[in-house]
Image (cartoon, rainbow, N blue to C red; front, side, top):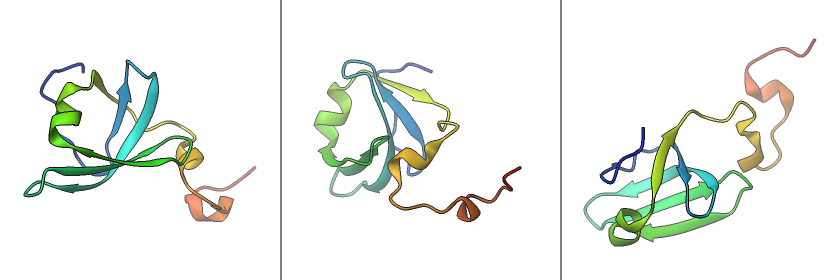
Length: 83
């Protein structure tokens, strides 16, 4: 879904089509209008609603290997067995 009016939702994934970078929202303070995001590579950034609304965003599925954005995850922590 591509939209000019995408609401930031915690744990949802988005693609910034201008920067060609995917990220997830890790915190959203609606009263203050502050959104904390974490890019797939682990980099954390903070945006205000004005910055968010200026982005060209697309809602995307969680990446299959979403662990790229998480430090030091053990395979056993992922909830599935290795074969």
